Length: 112
Image 1 (cartoon, helix red, strand yellow):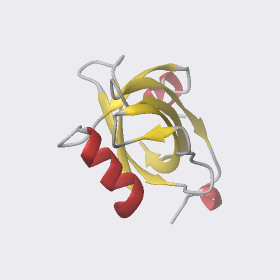
Image 2: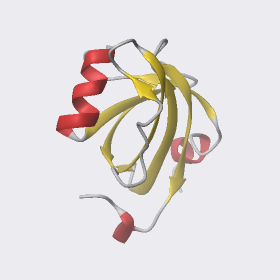
Image 3: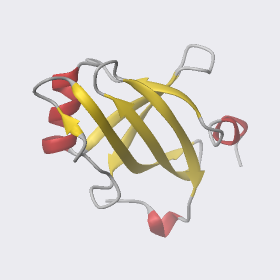
């Protein structure tokens, strides 16, 4: 397993990443696009990962996007430095910050 992948398997601070880390962009990505960006802030410069959303494992029932309140539980997969991983993150919509971690999975478990 890659050293960065291993470090990101520990629960740590994350925030919404990507080119436009706004509430509206997050909503669009969750509801329409199916790819979200999660930035692990504890690495040098931060590690911004594009996640293919697993809609069955993610949860948005506690989210109030119209008022910027509540939380979203995001799960999805990607390949990081040749390691197939699942990103698991909980994001507070008021701050666009939360906690997250990676878990190593089998390539057959990759979404998409």
